[in-house]
Amino acid sequence: MYDLLMLYMHEWLATVPFDLYELSLFQLVAQERSFTGAARKAGLTQSAMTRQVAGIERALGVSLFERTTRTVTLTDAGNRLLARAAGILRQVAVVAEELRHETAFGPKQVRVGVSRSIGFSYLPGFIFRFQRDCPNAQITLIQESSARLLQMVHERALDVAIVCSGTKPPRALEVAHHFSDAFTLIVPGRESTLSRATRVRPKALPKLLPDQKWLMIRRESATGRQLYRWLDRQGAGIEPALEVDN
Image (tube, rainbow, N blue to C red; front, side, top):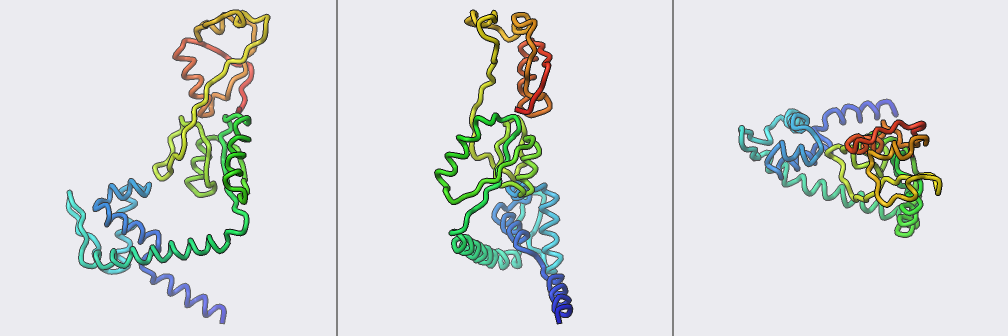
């Protein structure tokens, strides 16, 4: 009985003309009246968006859009599907919200990724503020490179990431907040020439600290690349004795 039921389900699934994701993409094209604009909002290429809609049309055996080089308009079949699509997607959203509400008593888990080059001194402040606003949430924290974290958010392996702004995110991701950080030069104490200086040009640093060993952010990281580019522009040729992640 189990095998027969599974066989029936497989045959039924094979005849389903589209899923909710494809229906959402169709609705987006219909609203935008443009494959290019819809693809941009969905974080897809235009060709990928076109293939998705063409797949729905093949499965249904009808044309949903009339396409010209300048315009995209709905056919009669497209208008009928659009009229139903909003209701279907709204019902799914209502069910999802009800499920979230019914399980609200349980702890939520938020997966947070933090770039390796962001100092640990920032993290307690971030976490304290979040737990104050969301006391029932549990945080899972990992540290990776900015590029890897963006990939993990894009793949939904993480809920949020704190990364260096030098890394360009995929179009499907949204930047929720920016914060500024300053590079800080830490030097020896009273025996240092810099302790008596009020203003020092960056290119003078190697001469003022000729015998000191430099500790720097790893240059392969997004933060390190920004730091080394800035030093190069200032004419400060610094070779570190040790590079670290943060």
